[in-house]
Picture (cartoon, rainbow, N blue to C red):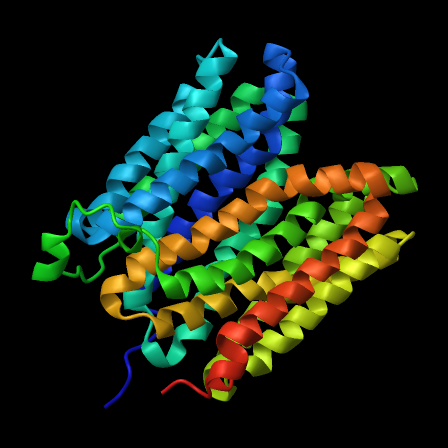
Length: 395
């Protein structure tokens, strides 16, 4: 029996939805703390809450959508949340109170968390099983592009046209997400009688999946490490006297991630999970050490390449493994759990590692953060690598 093609209309639309959805996330995450300080004279802690409130809302959205995804309908939930996504982007413009701004961030994050969970769970039904890692790698390139384009646009627009222009561009991207979502069709899954019976159950297993928890722990540790770079690389390079190196780092990271994702998924599908995962962890850890030891722009760029080959490939690699491990009825909950822990690591990382950086210096903090990558690798090997032999090639 011939396997269906990967590059279907639904897969291309899913990539477009992911690109525009993620671009809004990075546009606003990059500019929100500065906006809160400039417009509302917010303290550092409240400015941080204005930025991270989105992630708090996202966690709530993921918890609820993971359980009720198939009751609402995957496409319906995606479209409804993207309508809220557009309205939230518009709601930033008239805001004149910091408390209202934080509330909008929470609602916006909730829409993102629920919509992104619906999208990621849905695209798994579009990707052929034998091309699971390859498909997830290509799908994740949209997120990689947004990490480069979003922050660049946020800074350029803010400096040249003011914060309102950032919100208008974010609204345009959210609108494009909504339009693309309307064209995204995916096979819906009918909840089983047992699932309907437990629809209103508040048991922990209704919201948290064990498989998602295990691989989510890997991503929590990895997300903690990457958050240290995402949050403090600009401060670190400024301290070194090479402030432009932070931009070079993110460009190197994006290029390396895109390049690696073009072939890593295909190798994983054909040769097994460990053949990709183990080098990915190695590159990630080495990159964290190098960014801490680097004193020149060239070395910072090299660290960006290593971390791009590492963390940039880690998400689609772990995601492909997760979807292979869980039965179809649990894909929504497992996906929600997986990204919930990743979001937690990304949200908590700047706070915890900022304290470490303040006490030891950012260079030492980056080197110490490589230990988190090692712990993530050990967790992966314990949960999957040793247990399954890294799962040979996919059928």
